[in-house]
Image (tube, rainbow over all chains, first blue to last red; front, top):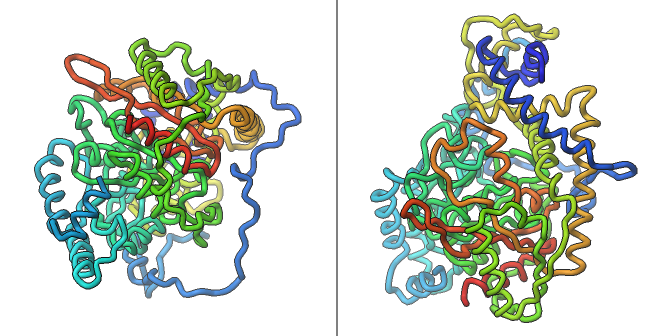
Length: 95
Length: 483
């Protein structure tokens, strides 16, 4: 079973805030599912290549050209941002 | 159905506006009970219908799907409409563009009535994970419609829409189609552009149609398929009209029945499946027992890959660019790893309050599976196993044209029956996840009903076809349906 510390660490990596009272529940539920994943250990995958694109499609290239965003209206995009300033998305201080 | 309605539109027996109004009437009557729709786009729908009517008046030439009312799942962007994907974190999100499928449907004149309910970010098998409302199964309102595209399935089954779009990552079109007694198609991976679909697990997601007949599903499918510069994984369709290939002849077709799929199957469902097999035989198909020895690994492989891709795709919901932003004023005791405390706490709070339990659980599972020291044991191992599972199917498809199985090991279950045990919910995806893992197309269609507590509950049969062979896959389901 995952320890409390492990659950807290996963939550931080995933950027999900957890209440102290939720940790035990996640310990139980995540562990039950991870135990189920263990089933895969039985399968021998020695020498097998991991799958790339499932239908085998090769590189899909296009010219490196600037195009207008068409229907993407700047104002409509900004309307969805939690905070804007001077026509830009305002972010919290990152430094 | 669509062909008949099309004839009526062309002959002037009914107008597209009348048809749309009729369906809005049905929605007004039934939706308060069933809860299939999250939002209606009435103004745009009636404008589109009016446009089609004008076109008919002028020269009479319209597309088969023009003027026919349908619905789209709420994780598919529709320009100017609220697109929540069933989540509170996107409560105020107004899509600033059309998904490629929405654009294509609008261009040919299809009428979009509204957006349908779903499990939050398509994560669930019952639509109970929607942050907004329950959707009830029109066949028995005490039961779930399946999920995650439960709203789309219920809208079609409840005759509130002629067709609907859903998305299928591990069965999210086929399982609700089975629970509600309608047709649901998951196309080959890449057949339909995913541009504008809120991503869940990018190597598994695929958009597809719901309808009441196989022909209707083929009509909608033909109009959304094709290569798209905005989705590098999409594939050319050469303008094929799949509805033109439904001749109903499957004489000599080879259908494989995997012996591993019939173990531990509920007796009544097993009986429906053998009756369906008998019917295929009568239609001239050759039935072969086949073996897919790696079947037992499909679910763990699916859940590892899916949760890993979920954890990565969901990172965009951070309270910065769009969607909800929350700061609860109290700081956690977690180490911010060099990030400014304010920014770090906003991430934690936004995702804590904005996302539901199942979504958080899957993000955390995927984060764990991708984290340093575990990547090889989980994600990489699963991608290797996926290669082997695909080989299993390639081998099977050298012997047979289609693989037949139940869509789900059960009929629609009651509300709350599985919400307390996520693993139990996951296990009901046993027959559907492989088509996504291998990228092949699969269709669910009704094969009868079983009696439970005085109600007749639909059971779905699933045919899986070869890659990019929707043409024969649809024809086989069509042959079954019409005999």
